[in-house]
Length: 595
Image (tube, rainbow, N blue to C red; front, side):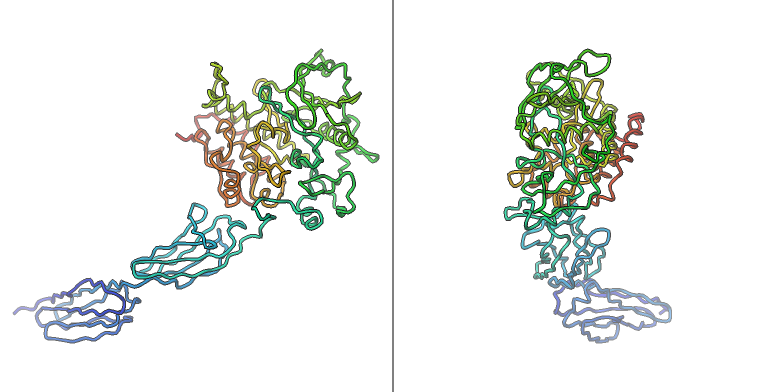
């Protein structure tokens, strides 16, 4: 016979068997001259025996090891003409096992590393404090590396908070068994919570030092403009700015550098009530008149004669008193009279008057094209009166709704539907609000309640920030009541404000991002599909609002820049204003719009 290249065949070629089982395979060869048969068994963990015959070789594997799962055992044959080879592939079935489960480590995101094995591939399920963990975009299992026997991965947590602390149990399971292991995780210290799960403010005696450490740089001074359904002026307590009724009725804070904080037993009449806790107010002489005043004479509160104020109609009533639409004579040059909104102080107690004058001095110093104008006071007799600019179209939230796709729902039975706002008009509105916030930040003021309900609209689409926290009667569902006293606008608040009551210029930036979202949804309530408790959970877990359908990608990128979890990573308010200016000047056709 002529010389022939050898041929080879392994029978069977694929074997599926349980761990610990036995397998026999035959390698058959032919060729001229007769080839030599060899099994390559390097690195094989399973015990084996080879029984050579004339033209074939039998391999016997006993006590199959799971380490050999997926291994391809090569049978090669060779003679003087050449060589050939064939393989036996092992599929070894075995129950799952967790080889390692490590404590969480922080890389770009938090990660709980694990390594699991099993064939078939096991199903993985996580439990957090013995409750099934539902995976979502911000908490999910990621496998970094697959091998025949092992999966290396981690449970990834994006911006975890105190609610993610606790025990994490990993359970792996396939048809042949299961395994589980538990690891502890501590991501962040919890805020103050009571037994019902509600956010609380610690009492003066037990937690005074911790509370003052968080808010000693913030001073509560004002609430000043009110919105009512028809005219945009509603009523809420002004005299309770510094009272037990509602600590957050006056959200605007001045950031003081004062560091002489008296103890709780030394607090005087200037202490501000935060919930049930008094916080000392350190006055900055740049903003308040006293014996050592640094205020310029032209910033003193203007006094208006009572006979120059003619009340036209009542707009609403709150705990502080009533709000009226009025005509005011001899208020501005070259105009005999103008429409104004006047707020009366019902209770003229000594403390109420002190609050009234304090607020008036503060408002006098807020002078900007996009901050509602405060004209002055009338104190000739009771009731005391504050006089404000009247904004014809009322609050921005109602304005957006009445100029959006759902305007028919706001028409109150009227057939005239207003024209829908264009994208360029929305950008014009947004940049005006940003301009007002740039001014407040430059004056070291923190708003704490920036929302479209607290902005007002005048003629020619002029928008101004006003109504600082005083719209809580009309928009009560926008607030979360805590402890029977505090009303928090949680849907507009960043995680640090929700969990630790920390309000800064950066928390105002977060709120501005939500205002942009409101504008491009025509006034929808943020997280409208969720309850307040669900909103708290979403925000503290790192979730953000989705991009509105009519929102340019460039604007949504701005929103995301406002919603960075770490305050220092958020966009600067001046950057936001500059970007909005640029977008407003750009032609809408160049903007990326969702279909």
